[in-house]
Image (cartoon, rainbow, N blue to C red; front, side):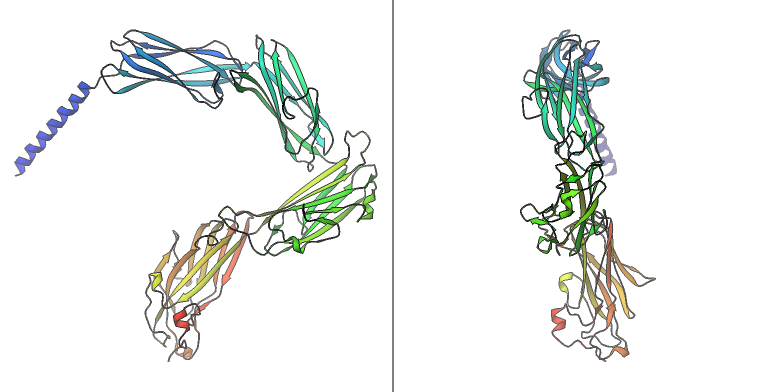
Length: 572
């Protein structure tokens, strides 16, 4: 029997080897195909050029259904196609033995001068008489020189809040040929107030069709406006100069400049409960303070201060303040009508305005994305008075303060005797009996409101006479564990998502405790076998530590409906 098996096995191996050899004899080898590139010696960013790709068939076979795919890196586009298109394909058809096929791709490099671009080509084909597909890969590097268009965006380094300033855009044709169908787009910050431009925009207040620009020609456009923002805040302006080719727009040069806000002659600042980085709690009453000062040498007349509160956790029903309140815009306004000192604010004069508002007592959580709640206060002070030499219609300053709300982490603990649903069976007498062990299942549940929690830990201490049996269950990857040295049962939770247990099932762990009453406890209605349950975790949004506790557990079992309905005293 052994000899027959060996002969049969050798026969199978020989047949398999013959089959594999036959496959490789029948399967044709790929043909001798060469792919070559031809590109200009000088390539300017923003100037279209031709890239030639030649495919040579040096074999004695026909290449059927040939196709070439040119893979483009970021910053290189096919003229007439979207700037985001990364692959350009052309059909080669059939290539006879010894034949050459040349394809031309019209390309443009956008917004990346003085760079090297690597292009890859993949040629796919079938050999005559076979169904298998073959491919040939090749790549080339394009050295990109300077941009064909020079673009300079000029702004002041600092601007006072509300004061008009100019945005200068200068562009020049650096290529050796005329350019046409150029366009300019300016992207302003959302708080920018457009006042005008040296040339009327063709679309909105930030787009110009520039038309043609002769070789070496230079032109400029000036836009003007103002910003309103807190001192030292920064805003970005971006200029994009592009060209339209065959119905597609291509960005040839993009420049970005940041502007910082200078201190305003009128200053205002915000604190809440005496701090700028206060973390609010549910139900807490917040006291907002708005301090203002005239830091100029000119008296400011008819000063107005507005404070707007934004956030669904504000309880506006409890708002208190001595200004004029608008419930439509949630804005408190102070002016000369309700604060006489604002009628004329002398040089160096300062003051303080306040309002109080409570935080709601619960989070309005309906879905998992309801998290990271904040309270925002925006203050604005202004006066029609403008210090001499200031190019503004009025003097303005603003301040903003965002306050994060601390989350709410809750732990519940209960003990059961009859608990078949948990999958852990308890034994022993109930009502409990002196010197007789009775087993109970302890349920820990954790709910987390509003913010993600990290490094959470639930724990409780076993009392004298109690024993951790080791029977545990959990709906998380971790389970309760006993520290035998201290008698502490603990459950570590590396992370708790915001909303867990609020709109879905809470995290839950079940473990079994066995308790033996002593003779001194005979007749008692309750003997404690597990101390106070505590939870602690880090609120990752507010960087604070959250804590909660649940009451100690005993033999009275108030949460066990069957046990609670009968006699519960410890029997002698």
